[in-house]
Amino acid sequence: MSKVKIGILREGKVPPDHRVPLTPKQCKAVMALYPGVQIVVQPSAVRAYKDSEYSDLGLLVQEDLSECDILMGVKEVNVQDLIPGKTFLFFSHTIKKQPYNRHLLQAILNQKIRLVDYETIKNKQNKRLIGFGRYAGIVGAYNAFLTFGLKHGLYQLKPAHQCKDRKEMEEQFNNIKLPPNFKLVLTGFGRVGHGAREIVDMLPIKEVAPDEFFGHAFDGPVFTHLEVEDYYGRKDNKPFEKADFYANPEHYKSTFGQYVQEADMYIPCHFWNSRAPYIVTQEDLKREGRRLSVVADISCDIAGPIACTIRPSKISDPVYGYDPQTGEETDFMQPHALAVMAVDNLPCELPLDASEDFGSELMKHVLPCLLADDPDQIILRASETNFEGELTSGYAYLQEYVNGNE
Image 1: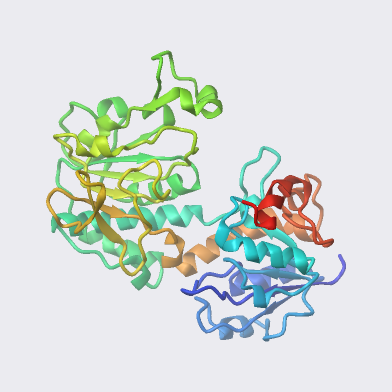
Image 2: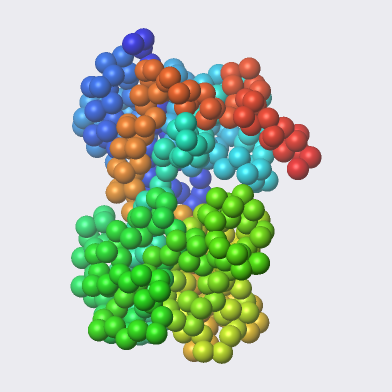
């Protein structure tokens, strides 16, 4: 292959993000796998991996990345750090027309940069190939049990971001003391949901089927993992059809209210279509006999399907209270309040592990298409912009957004 120089960008967002697209060992492995590739690392004082960990493996660490062909980061790149005519890979948060990043996309087009957004890298079946969802689920589920301990004064866990890595975080499991009648419900089976299951499966909590969850006495904590048909039903009471639900979600209603009465904790990890009905309404939470006390909303759709998720929370202050009677925020320790954990950047709490997991997926699914053959045009379809300063055909719908009309 021809010579290609890849630059690892310093993360410039505030508050700082400590993750990296490739760890030092992964950078070394990439250069061994692709002899024509050289990786250059921009110095960073906030990166989870120190500059010396890269340079000790023979990687060049320098400020100037202008000679690089491909620039890779994690979060949005500051406009002043863009380099014209290059290929950039990062999460741009523009494909949903986010107003706070319009200026960034305008600058990318003006500087004739090819933007490959990680969020748009998909296979022929339109399935995402890369992301931090697994670690969002892992940290979010851990935070759910941290929150439960705080809400009920049962135990205390060390916050994940204060742990060196996942191993140290998991050592905290010995402190968890759940009531024998504890009941948990989980929704979502994607990367996030499976990440959350990794944590739940490590705890002494027995899985039961959704129909067993109700009206049974168990000899210890239990959880159930719901498919979409377990918490949505047709408005006309005809049999549930998954394909029809995804095509016509407005024809369905939520049946999740029954779990509000039965479960102590809810961990939402689902993808939600804005055309679909809300899953948990304020009326569900106001209902007399509510048992639910903790919601760890990993999906974190603000003012969306989970009524108590009224704002995102911060890593440094992850829990707030929700008053079902008023629909407003309150002290989560109030007896009537739900404790809500809604951190929206959960993988940042375990940057070493999350970076290693992301880099592994990058090497497996993305770099072969970027650096060698791409028969399925994965990179082409994920390119939001081209070197001519234009939106590509798949993202032409963003033109009015770029123009400032949306």
